[in-house]
Amino acid sequence: MQKFVIRGGTPLHGDVVISGAKNAALPILMASILPSETVTLSNVPALQDVQTSLKLLHELGVCSKPLGPNSYQIEPQGLHHHVASYELVKTMRASILVLGPLLAKYGKARVSLPGGCAIGARPVNLHIDGLRQMGAEITVENGYINATVNGRLRGANILMDMVSVTGTENLMAAAALADGVTVIENAAREPEVEDLANFLNSMGADIRHAGTETITIYGKERLHGGSYRVQPDRIETGTFLVAALATGGDVTCRNTNPKMLDAVLRKLTDAGALITQGEDWIRIQAQGRPKAVTIVTAPHPAFPTDMQAQFCTLNAIAEGSGWVRETIFENRFMHVPELCRMGANFEVEGNMAISKGVEKLTGAQVMCTDLRASASLVIAGLVAEGETVVERIYHIDRGYESIELKLAALGADITRVK
Ligand SMILES: CC(=O)N[C@H]1[C@@H](OP(=O)(O)OP(=O)(O)OC[C@H]2O[C@@H](n3ccc(=O)[nH]c3=O)[C@H](O)[C@@H]2O)O[C@H](CO)[C@@H](O)[C@@H]1O
Ligand SMILES: C=C(OP(=O)(O)O)C(=O)O
Image 1: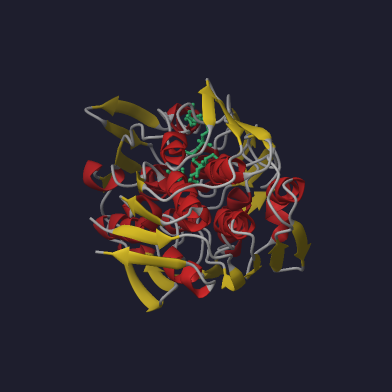
Image 2: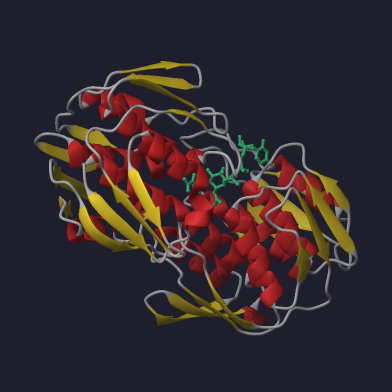
């Protein structure tokens, strides 16, 4: 199993180019079965989850051709199969995003239940309820969701009980080919939902007000092909910004979008960073030891749960006491005991991680449990005294493109050991 070996203590300096967003690329790839003609996608991040998505599409009969390291041609014309198997779904929860598009385009879908993961139970009841309201017949048996529809899905008024990102995306994508108008209320407002809507609209869909809590979709009989560029990854951006601040560095993130990072930039400023920004770049300059911050995760535009672990590392070494309250997932503090093994001082009470900043962390052997927990441990390794070995980095490869190469280019001493 691969691991990272990190020798901490070097402040990060320089420019880093941000990749396309994992959480935008995955729904867009799954929705690329909706058009009737070829789709070309660019700025697709080179990630394990993208490879899994292409494999899943391949099993449905949808071929993809790489046009470069971050660009693919997708051929939805080949769609002739409707099963997303457990073998693939178990490696990537986002496989559930194929359910809506497959049902809308093919009239039937058999998708393995994704099940829980390290961060929580993560049910998909809202996806199923919404599709039922659009006329789908759905049973859940033997670990699979079996869905069929007689003719086309029908437009419906759907009020989502909870804000769900992939739930909103699944229903919005399905509604793009439904008969009639669908209104999704209490929709997720994450930028990735907007990117999916922009992608579908560029293929001829009529989706209005994505990025607000009420999305209206005027269903079309068919979508055409075309080209689309995936938006930059706001979580990768935030991760590099935290790494720069934690190491006392000065880093500029390029090819990003500061508008998607309001809540994160505010907390970095509270932590004492100097932030400057342009349309597609953000520069962070550390001004001495960071100050501890308080954070409550919540749906966009509030502070993203996917940045919580990285800020735990920042609080671990910051001046003063801070806390992080996680309100989205019930078990997202798996990184905290690992940080404590490196000398951090945390108490976890329910959904709060309360920290008392320490002057330094010390290198240790630590283990990744999920994607963002892994990022927090890598950042901890970059600031710690001595050597840190981060194990089970397959988690980080799901969502960060060449993170060790990007960090090394900023001056970090990090190597991947096979
Ligand atoms: C591929 C992708 O985009 N993943 C992101 C997406 O995950 P994902 O879309 O899975 O997360 P959701 O927004 O659906 O989850 C939010 C909350 O709603 C609950 N829930 C969700 C659906 C449902 O049918 N029933 C239900 O109870 C979940 O258990 C969770 O407590 O949004 C999360 C929250 O911003 C991010 O951390 C993930 O990185
Ligand atoms: C939780 C995440 O992803 P996923 O929903 O794919 O597990 C994440 O990106 O932090």
